[in-house]
Image (cartoon, rainbow, N blue to C red):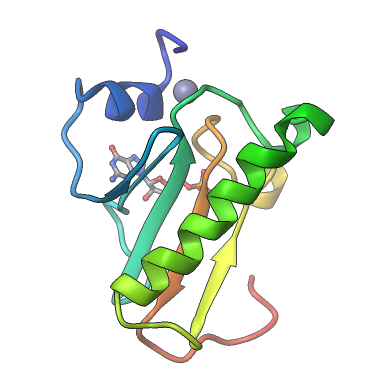
Length: 114
Ligand code: 5GP
Ligand code: ZN
């Protein structure tokens, strides 16, 4: 856990969140500022700042994050019609430096994103 990290505090339950998924390695909760009818953030319990900070040894965890997105999409009723996004780095829009995947759905999604 990183003491100053917002999402580590959410994992620890120090900051409340609307959780939709949890297993040994992963937590998912609704985004506080949803950009679509379904907007869930999927994060590892272990602190990793961004995708850039992951290494070969994190492959299993990364796979579990993506697999959780699939399960959440099914649970949320958006299977077959959703987007998974990772913003890596401030220039790409990352604002919380604990790696997370956005699961977005429930409306039509344009391409390319901004
Ligand atoms: P990023 O911009 O880093 O890709 O995504 C961070 C996301 O975290 C944003 O979509 C933002 O709305 C969300 N967020 C920021 N603070 C909180 C919070 O305290 N609770 C929840 N549930 N989401 C948050
Ligand atoms: Zn963290």
